[in-house]
Length: 128
Image (cartoon, rainbow, N blue to C red; front, side):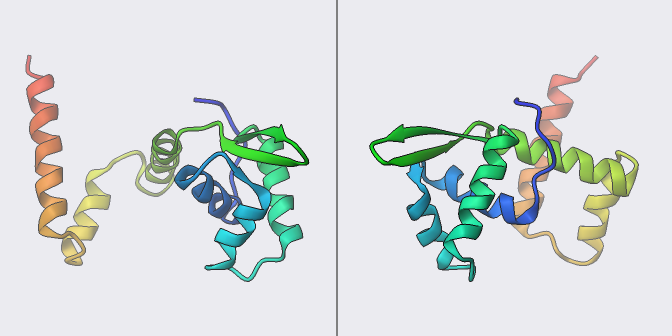
């Protein structure tokens, strides 16, 4: 994974668009973000430039426009951010996070099933 600087929430909105569809022009990013944000075109272009400088996205010139694409994988980014979050809030322990969701009934039956499968797989792989 490419080492990167912190990604702001606004930059993450742009990156999410690129993970969904790329390569994509700045005007297409603006149009897609206009559906959920009230950002001016200049704001989006500024965010694209910041992400390029942070090496989170790249671009290719095509005619008079630029086509942007992510340089980092979404799952890699999610893992990095999850680990950072768990380290900061739970001293690196996952159990208190999951227990909190369980206590508040925020886990669906599907969540519990997926967690059980992960635990079963982990136990199988880590038998001594």
